Length: 399
Image (cartoon, rainbow, N blue to C red; front, top):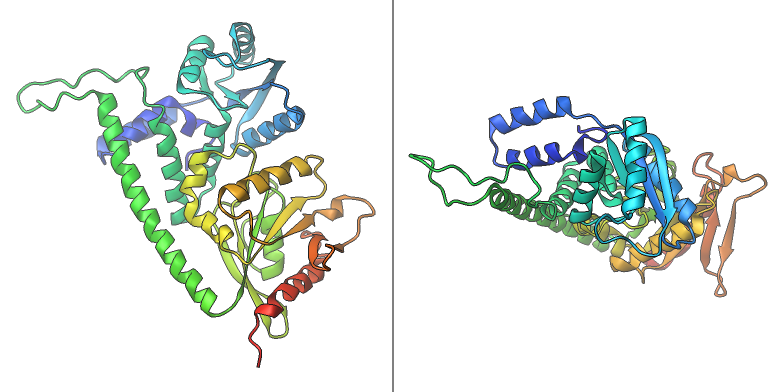
């Protein structure tokens, strides 16, 4: 398991690419390099371009960094009209970042924005340390958290797709391969070799994930024939989906107070009332600026959401950023083709709000539109089961 900032380090990325060829020597190089890689003390950079939820986004970056196992040395902020094409932050701000890095002896700078490869290289030259953006940080967290075979395949595909855009001339090992007796090759550069190896690995991963998707389609068709209500838990990361899933199904899915605690989809049958059951799936959490490579790589997982009969959109009722988080979730749902799937808003964690009681909200047609409950203490779960039973009953066969 690659921890903290190691998976973000350029030497790790380089040696990982070399290791794709399967060489034992490369594996040894990788282990040796990992023992030397430091940099778990990070400086955060969050520039304000007029975002109304700038403070919330900054707080979220801090949570992401801690979830990745990093220690935060300091935060550099500032306002700009637009990003600088060369360094994103501008020369004056880059000098400030460099001073903060040296003051704390930090080994990593994390931008709360998406950087181009050129901007990353320019920032690294100026600061003397590794620079990563929000997308790379999220990918690193996913790499740490993936447990199942499917999940690891999906994360690796997303990482390699992003890495392929980062293979540039700035690498130190791009000299021409040496010729000679028994050593003459096509004359390709190491960069070309790396790209070829990456292309092969990406193709292999796509084929394996296609098989995973085919298996899930077969399982889904089996559930459709059994006429079982298909329910997917979706929501912002750390909204309490896994805790709710465990409460409903008496399962033991991993749940923790951290971002992206769950990556692997788990499905269980849940009892609603006498003679009525449903299959409920716990899925990966969403977040603002969710990397497109992750959405594409997790297509097999997210298809479960798009083809559900109903979505339980779990919202952390105690979070002041809940409305912005809900908007981000809806955006992702629409992006994966699940925007038209019926959904019920589940306002979770009411135990954190003094005086808030479990309850049901209905629309103008009398249908359940929202619920208030606490997955932690179980209050309001009976209301959720009843709401699902209302949806399930029309699907039940009549005799």
